Every structure is written in C-alpha cells, then in structure tokens.
Length: 274
Ligand code: OGA
Ligand code: MN
Image (cartoon, rainbow, N blue to C red; front, side, top):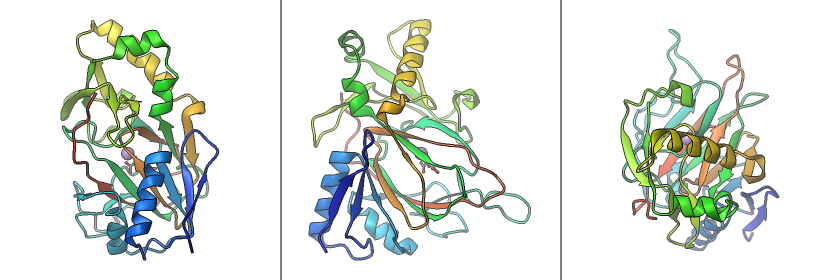
C-alpha cells in the first residue's frame, strides 16, 4: 500500500497512512523524511512496536541518541520512558512524570541539540496529556519586519534544570548553551525562531530588562494557537517531530490515571546555524 500524507489542517503536522512502522523500505524512509521536513510533525496511528522496532523506525530520521536514564520500564539506553507510573514506594519509573509542561525544545541547553524525536503512546489518560507543537518557521515569518531586524544575528543563552517543567521552576544553575535566536534549517533554507519559555534565559548583547521584555513578547507570539497543532493521543500513535523548527508543550492530566510513552531521540549532524 502506498504511503499517504494528509495534513492535519492546523498550522503544522500531517497524518501518514498506508504504513506499518515494523516494515520499512528505503523508499518509505525517504517518503517519511520528506513528510517530516515539509510538515515538521508526522503522526502514524495504530502501530504495534517493540522497543527494538521503535529504535529501527527512529533510524529513518537519523542516528539514535542515548537516554540520560535507563528506566526499568524498558531497560534499554536508547529508549527514554516518559511516564507517571511509580514503584511501590512512589518513585517515578520514567522521566517527565506529571502534568503540564511549558513550551520547549528538547536538549536546547546542549551545544548540539537533537534533530527530532519519535514518541510512541502505550497508555494514555482518558483526558489531557495532549502534546502541542508550535510551527516556528510560520511564527518567524509572521513577525513584523522591525522585530526580524532586531533579532538578526542575535544569540540567546538556554539552560535546563532537569526537574523543571515550567519557567517559574528554572534554577538558572543547570547546563547551558548559546544558540542563534533565528536558525536556518539546512535542508529547506527556511528561517525558524529558536527560543522557548522553559529554557531560554536571555538574549546576549541586550540590557536585561529589554531582553526579558522581548523574550516575553516572543514567547507569547509562538504560543498563539494559530501556530499550533494539539495532538490528542491514542494508544498506538507514533509521532515524530522536527525539534529544530517546532517547540512543544504538554497539557495537564490527572495523576490518578496512567500515562506511558516511549521516546527515541534522533541526533543531529550539525549545530544550529543562523
Ligand atoms: C518529550 C516531551 C511531552 C509529552 O518527550 O520531550 O516533552 O507529551 N514530551 O510527554
Ligand atoms: Mn520535550
């Protein structure tokens, strides 16, 4: 069956059908990559993957990076388990266990952040825990010319505290990296905003008050619903995002229900470039 790509109708994202993620040909991998570059987020539904099969699927998009923590729910160092499931003594068995998360780019605090990630849904609460993606190419293009001119050539410092899920929890003490605030995606030549509420601390070469005000304004801008696709998870969904030109957030959900997702992180071969 040929692969069909159907846009979500929102600012980004497409559903890919006619494809079993356990059986990938070189031609399929190319078609998936093309859809990934064009739509920034792709969703495949009704998949049935083992951890090993998910890792193989992730390789369609690049090299797989290691997880920071090996979860007993997988036992593999190339699967990041994202879950609120806890041991008998109440310790989370996965990462990012609970509730809402502010908009962020994965690993933006590192010198070479990841290219993307493939997230697979195994258990999902009856309500909430949606993942929202913002189209940073569209958000850049929609900026007034004066703002684009102000941002040209600027870099920002990004940091991460491993336990923070919102800007208020930032401790400023975590690992950090400086990146262009507008980056160019090499394959498409498109410019994309590269800042987020959770992890971007300040724009260099600007007085602190001005930097804070501009970051607040830009964060409000990129979180405008007109740039966003909100994914409501179904068991069996696998969603791949381009972590260079989309940022993502998670809506709240009840701690009384289980959520179990597995993530394969796709590495990049270049640092962000202006
Ligand atoms: C992630 C992430 C959001 C979610 O895996 O990087 O932010 O919906 N996940 O769990
Ligand atoms: Mn994330």
